[in-house]
Image (cartoon, rainbow, N blue to C red; front, side, top):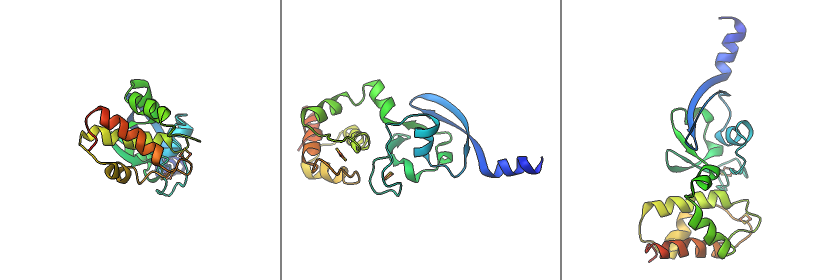
Length: 168
Ligand code: FES
Ligand code: FES
């Protein structure tokens, strides 16, 4: 191994990951976070980056089915796992009811928060529990919206839950 190879070995790693149900094998910088990998390397720009400090929730993705901050996750940590982004869930139709409810309730203005908000709301729906309006508010509390004042978003999620019999 040359000195150059050794240097590359320290700086990069090959990952094998399912992104939106498609296998991706790539050499990546070991310091790169998953948000940059999705947006820059794969051009999946529906995952937004706001604070990049784990505060705003704009970068929310699903990692093995659980909502995860892409900005706090090293790309290397996704090796061997499944990642779903707003693009994949939109293509599959998994978000159709929520998206329609967001439109009907005017729950997106600039929409910067919307992909993260939709993925977190989707996770809540997947739990299949009966929840109150306060429960919805608490569940979405890690996703910051600077535009809507939250009421329209809670209304939208509550309407989908009510249609499924899951709103208290
Ligand atoms: S960009 Fe990840 S939490 Fe804000
Ligand atoms: S709609 Fe603008 S940040 Fe939520």
